[in-house]
Image (cartoon, rainbow, N blue to C red; front, side, top):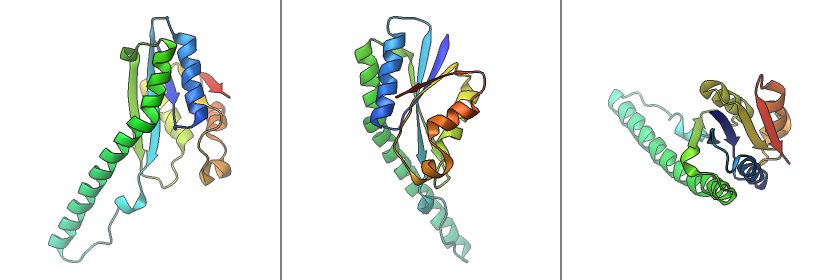
Amino acid sequence: MKKILLALDGSDSSMRAARHVGELIAGHDGFEITLFHVCSVPPRLLEHDGAEDPDKEERLEEALEAEFQQWRQAKHSEVQKDVFQGALRVLREAGVDERHTRLTTRFVTEAHADVASQILQEQDEHDHDIIALGRHGLSTLTELVFGRVASRVVRHAKGRAIWVVE
């Protein structure tokens, strides 16, 4: 079975990539598609100011963990609605059976996540044969400084097919 990693950020470009993947594999068996999205955890959820009193410190830790879990749940729902559902609709319209799709959201603690590295890590961990992504995603300062995600994936991916969709 060929495994496709479809990197999505909710941009028009990533939806075009989903459409392209759907058109290429519709009606063919032997494909599994992982819809993949990266979310940066806000710094305010990573640590608190601390307390000298051990009981107060424990309560701060518990409150921070509860706030993180609440944020993560809300963000997961937002990604489902704003990113994955659109891509699933596009794939369905192309004739791709949803039973062959997997949804993965990766939460990273860096303030400006290196999305290209996260895509490559996901590809390595799950042995995807193909990486598909849009050429232009949602721009951030990090992308402007360190290079666009698509060009970084192309430069650093080894031994896999890469579909970069304009």
